[in-house]
Length: 458
Ligand code: PLP
Image (cartoon, rainbow, N blue to C red; front, side, top):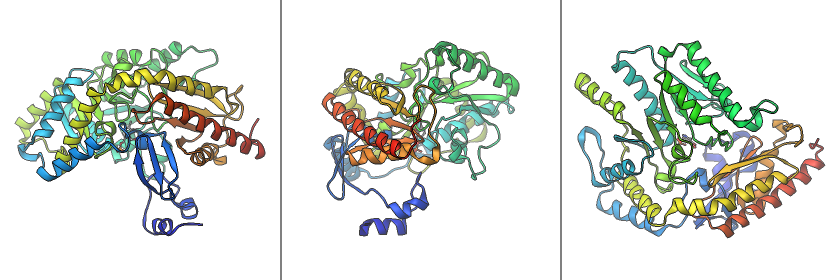
């Protein structure tokens, strides 16, 4: 029986990333409040937010300092833009702080409001830069199958997931996708992680040579693939990718929209995996999701070209109204201050062994083919036969069914096909991690019973 609120939702909203047809029958899960790592629906039922919203609410749901900071900034100066050389203290302070903690030498910071627009800016800068350098053919950008970089025309093109392309007339020409670094699914029988990484780096090099190195401008990658299924890279992967990119003068864009600010157990995933990034996209945990804010951090080489272009053209003709919004910047400054004061990276490193022990234990479950993670992010893959790694038919909806059983148990997780992701708020304690996986195990048991009853297990 749908509530009044659910009916109003169905009659008014187009939901992102939702089956709009079945939504008309099932209706929404309406959340009302949050505290710590928990959120509560309109019936008062409590859930552990095992996905930190959408990989973003790092400090949990009731951080009074962030709330106070937002209110204070709203009272003082609720808005000023940073077009035409205007500025404000929080924007400057945040950029200084980001430069200080950046994992690679960073010269300047450009603000946006979402991960998508940060990556869209990256694409535009790559094109702009190569025109400025007199290499108008060097424009192609390589991303990876199952990579996720956003939903704008350019960033949905970078995204390597079919549902972001089908019937949207994407990807755009000049955006290419190389192999997905998922060892469990795509390694050949007996192939070690190092050998798999070497093969993928060789495939990338072949693609560059096939296209012509003078036509390939940039490569973009998430340190850990998020929406592709919470996939951590195989051993040696980025080291080998770095070498290929350096050989052909190809810019490396690190998409840290999910992994930035402690998620992988270091401040940035770029550090965890030794990525030789020229520029970095940030969003989500930059404000603990208390305000939409994103940033592109760029090195001196890129910045110098932008300055030269302004000498030539007269302006850097890019930016949006809410770029560097004072409330967002003030919240981000406070968020970074809390990360530092509370030693959030040390906290993640301290609780990660419990998270990874419980995550890895899920691999013993009859439904789970793979369990793998790093820091406080990880994924499991549900399979019908662990021995052969046989997948379920997608239309049986096993992943979504597991998510629904998890909700019954008071756990929010997310299915990407039959992969389930775990990415709790960074402030989660060891006891809460144990509780999260207890709930998950009960949900998997229910899913297994259901799958057996449906005759889905091999
Ligand atoms: N890049 C990565 C790695 C992401 O995970 C996301 C969103 O989840 C994006 C970009 C897009 O960010 P947004 O949804 O804020 O546009």
